[in-house]
Image (cartoon, rainbow, N blue to C red; front, side, top):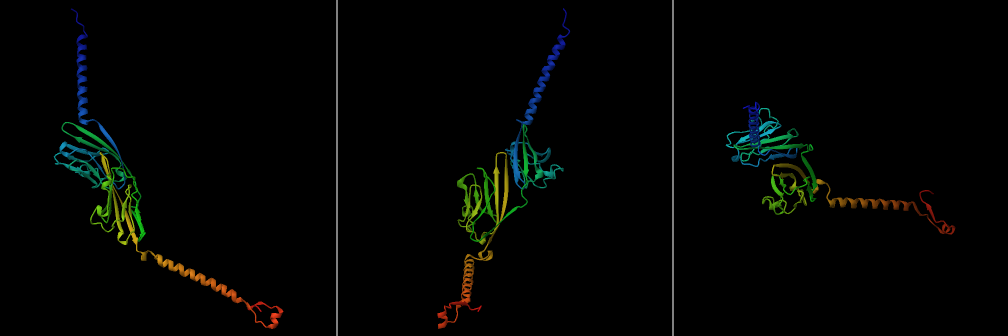
Length: 317
């Protein structure tokens, strides 16, 4: 019986194809397990000087290891046992750009960047490695510059109202909190019932006594200002989402002049106006009198009357 010389080789090829397909499938599964469901990218826009928190969405007891990378360089790491925690140069000597501005949450592994700068723009990659799976998330961060002036200076006279503008378009979940010399004086949240001012926020802030008002944009108005209202006002804005949180601060230096210090009072100003008007009236009256003196009747006698002599200029005979 003649045997097909290609039958063995064809069967071998089929077996090799099956093995290769099986290996490819195994490699695909391994790759899928190692990378989870793939990488998610989140765009984050912040202002220079903000603090931003990148949320992991997990608890440290749920994973073995969390690693953070910036532009491919490891900048932070924490393991589930909390036996190894590092940030910045402690993780990698080449990551000095942050200089103690990084912070890791021991419970969640979330990364905080404080006082963010323009040079911190770029891609931040989160790698969560578990015993059975892993997941990645990428934060694409853009840092925009801000004006050089860190404090807005506001000056008012005593008794005038002043509005400190938040300069923000508040979103429903944003929380805006006002402080005066570090004491809480007003807050507005997504819940209108939680909006408070003065003693409603803090029993120690009775100095304003119903003179504060905060609107839906977060701007603060102080009515009938007093010299005791002068000082440093700070607005803290917290913008939150499921993936990140941004904390932004604005400062206002308020000066309130006493009436005596700011210039003339209204009564004094009114007095000056009266004096000026009286002086002007006296000047006009004097001018009329002088003109009247220039023209007067000449000495008259019966002959003058008969000749019809009436008036002559006494200064020019």
